[in-house]
Length: 261
Image (tube, helix red, strand yellow):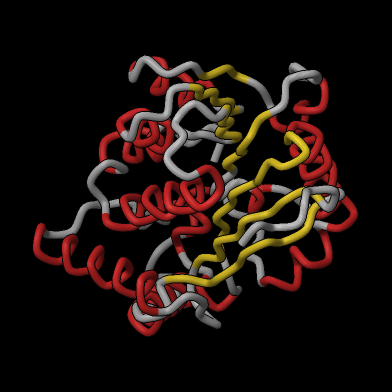
């Protein structure tokens, strides 16, 4: 999404309110608490942190040892406006950035969709190198090509994933998948219908590709809260779901100690 300053501005304004971001941020914290319990001093890196909504949420939850990196000047500027410790760096150059610093947890949300396989393999290897031996990588990703729509065009997404993609890519980086689930399963018919409508508009020429708009907008209060409650209930009642517009994974080093459960 580098170079799309208007999308970063929308993200900065809305990610603390919009149902999708709120749920994702809480899902990440749930994964961190499964990993480290109530500890708030673990070292966390948000790689591709955008405008800093995730880091800000972690800070509000008491996490104190935070670091962010992003390859967008606009995103980093918004992070600094929040007072967050974020450094500008192209993720393709991650291997040479602070190579001796390791983290308990790395977050990399909705970033892999901008990388082709060769570059993604390099990024995963660099992220694995930054993990402590028992550390975890938490990543949310755009899922299933069927959900492709104007949002993808607006933010520059070049690919979507299924779990099999990561089962293929992770071992070469020395990583293994610990947990994985698709989400927004209950909302899938609604999201799929909306995205198919968007694609039809493009196919019929009713909207030009350069006019594509992202899905980052705030619906009415009641609808925003309803959508948030649906995805939260889904997470609490359905441990894993087979379909959804996002794929959430928790990954660990293949050399990690046996999971204590």
